[in-house]
Length: 160
Image 1: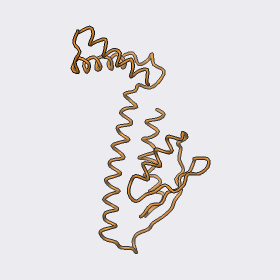
Image 2: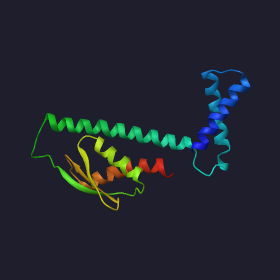
Image 3: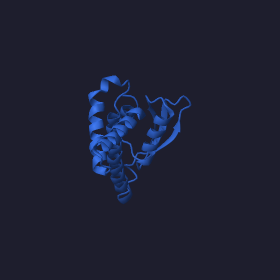
């Protein structure tokens, strides 16, 4: 991936030198031309194109913003209308497919940063996260939600 980015920047610099124009516009045009060349010759690269990983990381960030907003609203509703009889705090185990330390740390951080949830413990074999949630109606639904949002997006960024 780093090679592709450096190659793209190198093509942009060469484009600037060919045009005898050292400006941001010339660099951007050269960068776009370099990106098109990299896409055109993608079969010569062993790894996935960096633009795909960049797109996956952007999707992960947007998913996090959506979940952050929804969690803030739900926690705000609990705070503004405290009906303690209907609140169901729960600790549940989330089995994960993530293998690398940074993936598990990222998932734990994203879960903890959304209001109303906290990762309490990661198992020694790093296959299970123990999560406390302030209000859970269905544990299976909560697990399914986390696996289909954060975990799926992290896998897209790191593996495919």
